[in-house]
Each structure stands twice: as C-alpha cells, then as structure tokens.
Image (tube, rainbow, N blue to C red):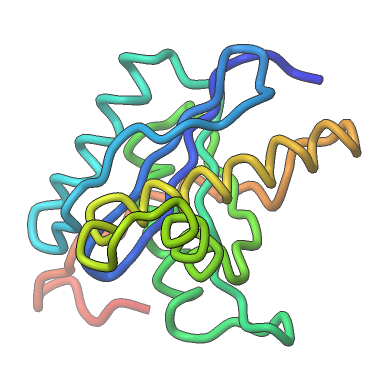
Length: 168
C-alpha cells in the first residue's frame, strides 16, 4: 500500500467537509468545514493550502451516486468541483469515490454520540468526509489499487470574446 497523507472532501451545496489520513494511510480524522464559495472559489483555495501544508499524496472527493448507481445533478456538481480542484492543485492527483449515504451515516453517528441536530450542522460535513476517506483507504488496503477514478487535470476554459466566435 502507498504511504502518504490523503485528504478527503465532502462537497455540499453550502459547506465542504475535509478529513485527512495519517501518513500510513490507515485512519481518517476530521480536519475542518469550509463555507462553499461559488463566486471566488475561496473554499478550493483553502483546500489547496491544506494540500501544500500537509504535503498531501492525493485528494479523494466524494461522488454522490444514487442507490441504483446512477448520477444526478449532485454527482455532476461533484465532478465539476473535482475537475476544477484538480487543475488548481496539480500535480497532486484528485480521485472521485462513491459516497452513497455517507451524509446520512454521518448524521446517524453524530446523533448516536449525543450531538444535537443544530450542533451537527457544524461538523456533519467533516464526519461525511471522514467516512468517504476511510472507505477509500479501506478499499485501497483490500485491493492494493488506488480507489475510485482519477480526475483529469483540465483547466477550465476561458470565456471567448465575440471576435473569437462561439465556444464549441
């Protein structure tokens, strides 16, 4: 199994949860919750800072598939987020891993630990990121292969001017 710190990311519409593994890649622990910033991308800037600060081997982003395995709007959003993040933190690889039901499991675990509903909001995204990352670590340990699918490092296209013509 590869050694190095992995960063887990749970992308939500309002918040982004982060978790990190130990250097041996055995145990995932919560790191922080970021406010999602669709305008400036400050959340992705904060993730890039964590990647550099912790010398992260790879980033694992949760892909919210439906129970049937299909992908809806939330999965499409996670793919766009992961692609943009991959371009921002290159050459650090970004991988997408199935995260079905992680937020529900995170809420259940927090409730079972005695944390009230309002108090859960601040940490549920971190807890979901822990579940995503731990599942990825466990999958790699059992298969010997990196988890999920590698995200291509494409830079977002710059808007074209009228003189350049329409974008294809």
